[in-house]
Structure formats: C-alpha cells, structure tokens
Length: 418
Image (tube, rainbow, N blue to C red; front, side, top):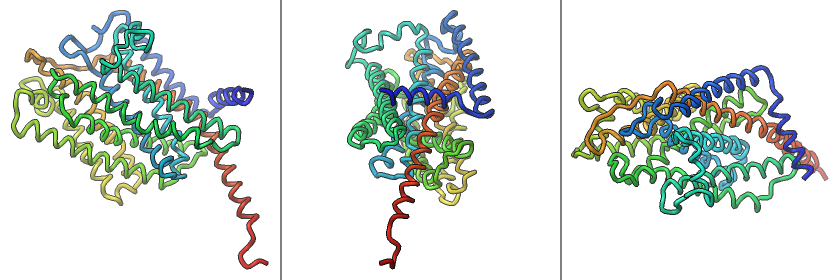
C-alpha cells in the first residue's frame, strides 16, 4: 500500500513539473475547455435548439466525432499486437503511449455522447444494474458495454505495467498478458458494435450495408495510427524519450495498408450505389453529387477522397513514406480525410432524404463547434497528463535495462581469454 501511495504522489508531482512550453500548452487547452464549457452551458439552458440538429437530422457533429474517435481508440491494438504477441521490444517501448491515446479517445467518446443527449441527467439509464439498460436487446447497450470494458482494460493493464516498472520490477507476463489478449479482441469489438449500431437501422439504407463494419475497422486503423505517429514525433522532439525510427516505419506501413483497404471498400460501396442506382441510392447521390440545391456536403466529401488518394500514394511508395516530412503530410491528410468521410460524410447522408422523402441540409452551429473543440481539448489534456506520468517511468526502465545489459557484457569473458 505504501508503494502505491508513493506512486500516486509521484504521479501528481510529475503532472505539476514542467517547463514554459508545457505550461503554455496546458493553458491553451484550459482556455479551449473553458470556452467549450460555457457554450455547453448555453446548450443546457436553451436546449438542442442552439445546434444545427432537428427532428429530421437528429445526429450531427457530436455523433460524427463519436464515430471517428471510437476508431481512434480501437487503433491502439495496432501497437499492442506487435508489442506483446510478436514480442517487438522497440514497439513495446511506445505501446503505453498508444494506450494513452485510446484512453483519451474513449473519454472523448463518452463526452460527445453526453453532449448529444441534450438531457445529461438521463445518462444514468445507461448504467448497468442502475438504469433501464435494456441489455442485450439494445445495440446502444452493447456499445456502452464494449466502450466501458475497453476503457477499463486500457486503464488497468498499463497501470499494472507502470506500477511494476516504478518499483523497479519486471511486470509479470502471466498477470498482464490475458488482459492484453482480451483487449485485442475488445478493440475490434468496440468499432464493430458501433458499425452495427448504424447498419441495424434498416430504415436508413445508406447505413444498411454489410461492409460498414470492415470499412469502420479499415478507417480506424488508418486515422488512429496516423495520430499516434504524429504524437510520437512530438514526444521525441520535446522530451528526453526517443522513439526509434523502425517504430515509425512499422506504424507507417500499417497506415498504408489500412488506407488502401479503406479506399477499396469505399470503391465497392460507390460501385454498388451508382452502377445501377435505385431509390436507396439517393443518400449517396446527395453526398457525392447533391440533389437540386441541396449540395452542402459535396465539396467536403470530394476533398476527403482527394486527401485520402494523395495520402495513399505517399504511403504506398516506399521512398516517399520514409521521408519524414511527406509521411507527416500523409498522416495529416489521412486524419482529416477519414474524419470527413467517416464523420459528417457518414452521419448526415443517412438522414437525407428523410423516410418521407424530404430534403434538409445540416450545418453545425457555433455552439456545436465550440463544444466539440472543448471536448477535443479535454482528450488532449487527458493524453498529455497520462504521457507526463508514464514517460519518466519508461525512461528509468530503459536506463535500468541498458545498465543491466552493460553489466552482463562487462562481466562476460573476452574472446580468446583463458
């Protein structure tokens, strides 16, 4: 118990220790969070009327961000598998950073759902054993289970590993490895269940497709690792923690393959929708070409497709992918492209036209945008604080490992000695 208390005290001390750049970053995040909270207060006071949503288009920017971030959370598995299943020591050094991204992403997912509720006090209905959970009949109940379970796994397993390293001990593989294996399957399940949440709406033909689940996973394994690549480079630049080049190369290859699969599945969808269009193709037509004067999303979706095509070219050609500047550009393009495609490009067309054939356009309001930015700032704050705690422990463990290797090599008899 004493070691646990010391660990928690030192973690708090690490959070409050940093230079001018660190405190400036926290100040910026705090300011954005404060603006988001004030606008959320306006939403609580006046209701969802202050958003661009309506009875016809009842999901908007909040659910778009939720859908995107579930994929970001699931993408941590792309580090967990090579680190713990294939025992890649270089990736094992950064896997906790990837799980920090997952924790921040799940936190934002829950906040975006809360913001979308309009009446947050009703959220207690989603709590198992307390509210009217309606499990297993409700797909939303399944989503709560998988997100809550995934958050628990990504908190407990890294906590045990960090606490063991803090005490100078090697983590017991027999204790944490079952949780690692479970988290791999759980990561796939959180995005699969989210896809089922959409595709089970048979009255929304735009979502009612069997490839929605594979598309969700492919896009998740594109944008999530892309965010991790950028985060690792920021950490490498501004801290003493150094990320090996081969780690970035492996993650970049994962992004390349995932983006290729994502674009292939998008092409399959487009062929199905437009080769022999039916009334069920109106949502896709609205998204890509517009219907009459209703063409709000057309420039956005073609921008997303263009971004993803440029990114996949850079990521597929090895010399380009290994050029750090081009790699970073491709990561940014794929992050933005997938966000548009899987966010607003997925949510809004599902409601247009309505089941009565009516046409409505949706544009997020200032309140929605500022609340969304505030939630993103909370996620970045969570990731920053988790990283601030974990990096010193990881660095100390690396030093101990290096000293141990040096000691063993120094004590070994020299070649040719008696």
